[in-house]
Image 1: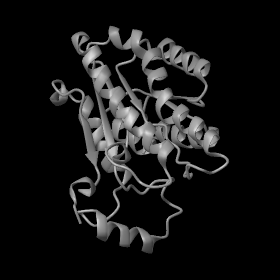
Image 2 (image 1 turned 30 degrees about the horizontal axis):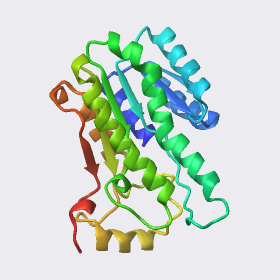
Image 3 (image 1 turned 90 degrees about the vertical axis):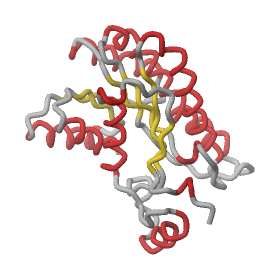
Length: 235
C-alpha cells in the first residue's frame, strides 16, 4: 500500500519523502519514480527505533524545507494465541511498529506541520480496529489504538488547522496477504465482503489521497473503512 500510495501521490506532483525498512525495496521504488521525473528521496528506517525516527524526519525537513503531509503506513502482521510462549515478544513488536511508531512520527513531524498552510496527517489503521479476529490480539489492539490516537489528535490539533484522519483497509492484496491461497481468498470474499473480492492497494491509496485534498479540509477524526463492504455485512 505504501508503494501504491507513493505512485498515486506522484501522479499529483507531490514531492515525496519515503521510508522503508528494506533498502532494496526502497531503491526499486526510487528508481521507478526517478524514471517518471518525480521529486522523491528515500531513507531506510525501522519505525520501532525512536531515535531513528527523529533523525529521519529531521533529514526530511532539512532536505525539502518543510512537511505538509504525513502518512503513517508501516505495517506488520504477527498472528499469535494469547497463551503462546512468544506472545509477549509479538505483542511488543506489534505495538511498537503499528501504534507507537505513529505517535512518534507525528511528534517528530509536528513542528514542520505547524509551519505548513495545509497540514494533513493520515494514519493507516485496519478493519481490525473496528472489530476483531481470533489469534491476532496484538494487531487488533494496536489498530484500535490507531483509531483512538487519530480521534484524540484530531480534537487536540484541530484548533491549529491540522487534520488527522485514518484509513481502515479491509482485505487487500498486499505482501501481508499474499501467502493466503487464492481459493481461500475467494471463499472469504464471497462470504464476508459485499463486493465479493479483495481490494487492490491503489484503492486504499486513492482514499488516502482523498484525505489530503482541499475538498477534505473540513474532515478530521474520521476512520474510513476501505473494505468492500466487509464491516456492514451481518451474514
